[in-house]
Image 1: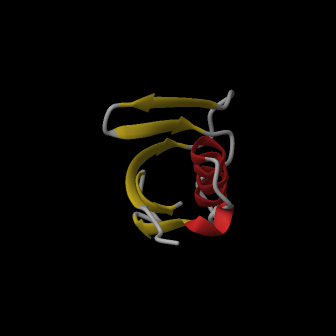
Image 2 (image 1 turned 120 degrees about the vertical axis):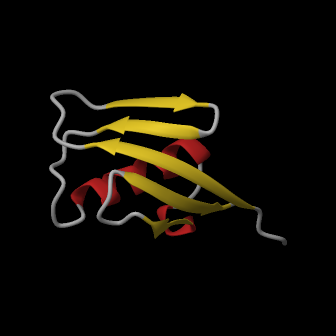
Length: 77
């Protein structure tokens, strides 16, 4: 079975009162309740992407932006 690789650009807004995800053409915007420390936003972003793309979390990999608001993930399906 061949793996299909998709690259997703994500902009994260940490520390929001409500969690909201906006999927636009070209990127995903995530308004997350988690604070921007200790990788909490990265972990939640990974969980949400796994739900959106209906894959296991281990198939969602953060490749750029671990300490930035702009992040780039690769998703294998």
